[in-house]
Image 1 (cartoon, one colour):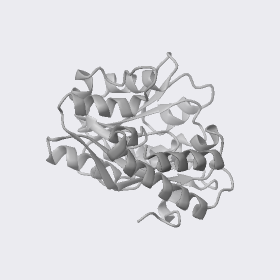
Image 2 (cartoon, helix red, strand yellow):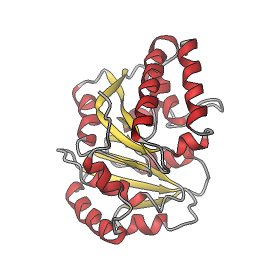
Image 3 (cartoon, one colour):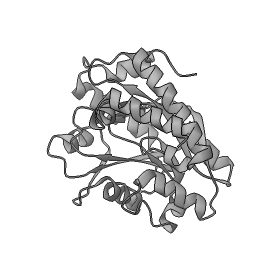
Image 4 (cartoon, one colour):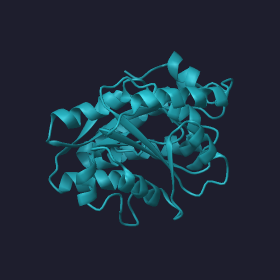
Length: 267
């Protein structure tokens, strides 16, 4: 069941009243407890001009309750703002990737990661406290699963009401369900919430993809088609991401029309 309201914890992380310096210090302290000598899991976050959101994202990840040792890598992809400064203030590894583009940034993180498992995250997303455990457990317990991915809801950057997005997200759920039967489940995989085994990703050439594909979904497709296992949706892995993608695509109305066309066509 999709949430009708934004949970209290997510609201607190997202609040504009938060003192970022205090939040960064709290994040640094929490990360020291999350990270052990050798990480089991590496969370990779590409970042381009994310000074307004990156601390909140890192704070939410570092508040996770998990039995795994966790490394976090932020890949600074030519940011012109204070993204790198805020990442350093949080005590998190910040790599620099000079070649512009999300694929290059994710490949950089994958190459430098030390964890056996990789989790994709985004710098404008807030993560619940059970997130790491939820996306890794299926991979740990079932070798026939190649990649896990979660669900999401939107955090409004402007004045869109939660109820409006609730209906939009429900429609998107129908579209994703149809993808499994009429298109390909791999298109349902998003970079802000997916996980896989590092060695297997390296064997399929990482995130590299043809021009007409996305890096996250294409990696999922390669892992599955290589025979590493199936794709697995984790309903408990429910994240909250900003609605800026909707605005980039032309706004909520344009997105709604696009979703309706997909549902009618069954693709």
